[in-house]
Image (tube, rainbow, N blue to C red; front, side, top):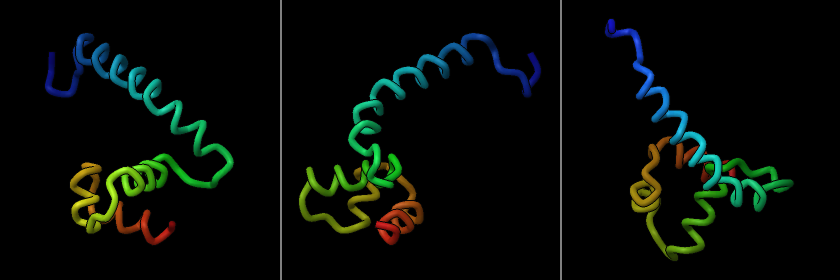
Length: 77
């Protein structure tokens, strides 16, 4: 296998992960339906609601997202 090829086990692993992720996000998708919010924004709001007062840096760390992405989403909210 060359460096540009992906083996079947890796493909199977990624597909399994994607299916599990979609199942986990389905409830959030239903909640956000019709709100105009995307999944990232919904996730941010849920984290804020459940964790109480945090700085935006602490929020980025707890969500494991890029600080720039968090900043853009907070501005749009």
